[in-house]
Image 1 (cartoon, one colour):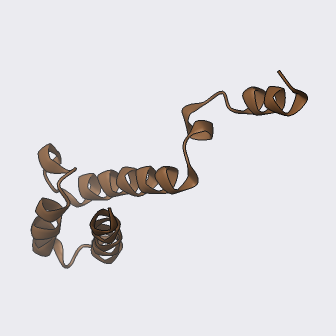
Image 2 (cartoon, helix red, strand yellow; image 1 turned 180 degrees about the vertical axis):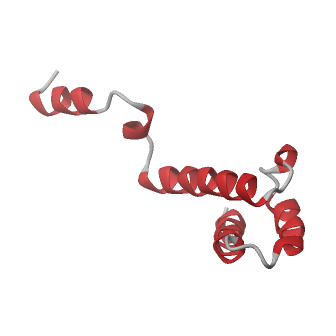
Image 3 (cartoon, one colour; image 1 turned 120 degrees about the horizontal axis):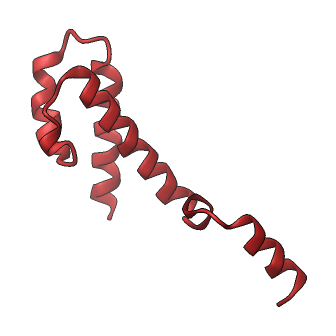
Length: 83
């Protein structure tokens, strides 16, 4: 094992260190979306279904987290379309 490989292994001891930044970013967005939907009051049985959340979110237009949640859904839907 070379010295540089040894350094990589010492610093790559968590899952977060091993995944690509793009993947980490997507996971963080889904985590934030989960928090927002729970805070708003959307049923958590389908919180991975972006289209369901988008539809349900329309009922909460007056909620202070509506804009952030809507923007986050749009970003995730855009990312899903690129795949």
